[in-house]
Picture 1 (cartoon, rainbow, N blue to C red):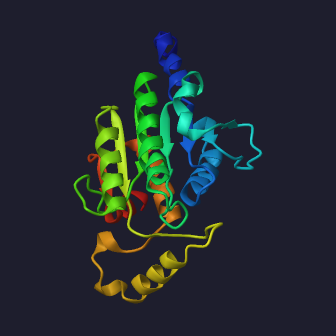
Picture 2: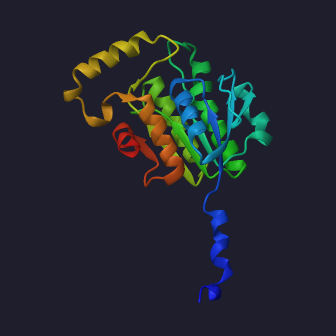
Picture 3: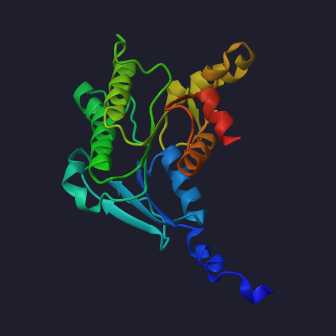
Length: 232
């Protein structure tokens, strides 16, 4: 009786496993470097395109590096093709004291990337913002992040996820004295701090970004406490 089974039963097997291409902006930073490592180890992705000013130094056949001026990202539209974009770009006032340059990094690069993603039909865009981002804030940092979120969402990319972490903990290549002190204080008095304001590890953010790319989520703006739930 087995000979009567329809032949098409065996055909769908070819489509059960689809390899994906990812783009990372900010792969040399704390969270982006962890995410890059996870993507290299993940069999769901067969190509990882990095757009950055300097090399991430990862020797993997999966990795395709584009060393460019990120302020002119739109000039590289032809290469900006993938299934998902991970935007881990960000700076600090201490590192970038000039407001105009700061805005070009924290607002300009993510928004340009979202516009390119929309133009090139990329269905998933995941970007790291910050807790308390608000386009109407009097605080320059919060306002810049809020304006970035607003204009990324305006692109109406099908699966857009904006991560709003609290203070990010991890081993950085650069010294951030203020953040270190804040981290120590927040850890010491963590029992008094609401969940979404607690320090969050970069590894958790990277894990959540990977899960969002694969499984999606019901909300577009995701605070620290929910990032931890997704990663868990």
